[in-house]
Image (cartoon, rainbow, N blue to C red; front, side, top):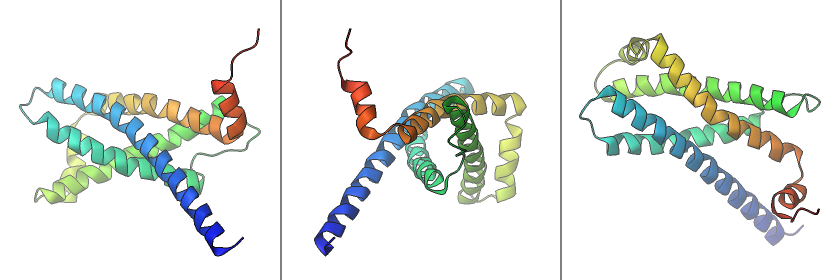
Length: 172
């Protein structure tokens, strides 16, 4: 393959990865926005929903990149012999752990930005209470499960076959 062929291949791969990143980030943004609106409405504070949505967009973009990095490094992947549903469950739990870690780090960073300490940010996470944390984790899990299932389906069905299944007319 010549130099121009390699450049085209790299350009094609980069375009593909950017499209996937955009899809994953958009998916996460839509669902995280719903969670943020719920938390905002439940808190009853007069804060700015727009600021929260902006933070949610940033969170979705960064987490979307972490999801793709997890895919590259095989986070949550299993033996192909395991059933598809089982692999999707394991992948979604791995992604949920990543989200939980991300939330803790985010709170520490927000505390540092506001002149506090990282410890105060971690205490803010603990102050939310077990019920609130478990509810948030359950919502995030329900968000991540379809994404993990789609990743497993795409990983195990060749693209041309998947497109055929999705867009071909059914006979009969």
